[in-house]
Image 1: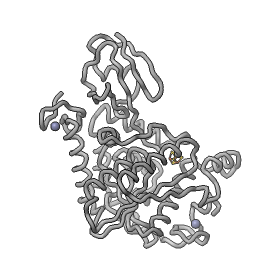
Image 2: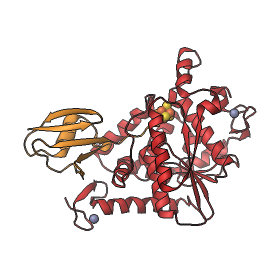
Image 3: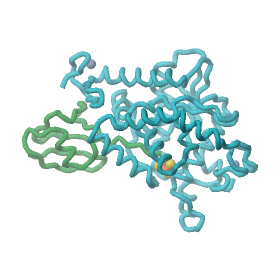
Length: 307
Length: 66
Ligand code: SF4
Ligand SMILES: [Zn+2]
Ligand SMILES: [Zn+2]
């Protein structure tokens, strides 16, 4: 098959658009899509100091690479990267190495913070301990995600960032949306829009330049621009989210465009969701233990990690 | 005919009829086409590309997590 734009050999068939793209046109299309998402959501503005949450996986590596490529020349913007070492044997070590190498190559300052240092224990120790006790709540991802968000927000803020950029792609976004539906969590759902939300001066607003690009396309982009990608899956990966992922992938394979439809429909509903949530709005206070923002007196991270 | 498939660090041979497409091999390997990119040497293949005897295909899993 030939590229619909130039006739060279196609590397991708974008079924939901009915187009074929060669290497060059594929890479360009991803970059222009991301730029459009950034512009539409007013994700990056004059004078921003942006912390990139960099795990070393394909999504976070690609978002750093891309934004740095298209906006790196702008003198008024400042970029740096933060990686979190949760202490997941083998898996994280490998991806952190990749993250470090990428930052070096791009000339981006790289900060690494670990659960061990900040919470006194690794995720692996925590999981081992807590699985045996009655206190076990949810999955490893509950403990991990919570603590990682807490740490990223705190460190990004302390390092002077006014935004945190994430590599979440379309698949991650719609998995999150569907999960919020399943749990009936309207408050979380109301924050799933495309623009950075200022909730409180202690929360650094988040941006997701890839939220409208399917995961597979980010994967191909990463391969084509020569990023080293780490293929392993986290050994703790579990929970309903991954069933939702498989379900959405099955539907997409059967009828291309399903993923976009989930996002677009959600965006139409979003103003109403926000209207409902406003009425029952949550107050944000400072956690009495750690001083970080929280909706309860003691934040969930302190509760689960005993900080 | 047989084609060799490398999936992660596992290698296996897949039996498909002559003139099969990448799509058929994907189906045979039982992975969702949304989660894999197929490469032959340096070439990225489309699901409709034809595979030939003794091709070596690399399946790159595209998954998130962590
Ligand atoms: S899959 Fe779960 S446990 Fe593993 S890094 Fe992600 S959130 Fe943490
Ligand atoms: Zn082209
Ligand atoms: Zn706290």
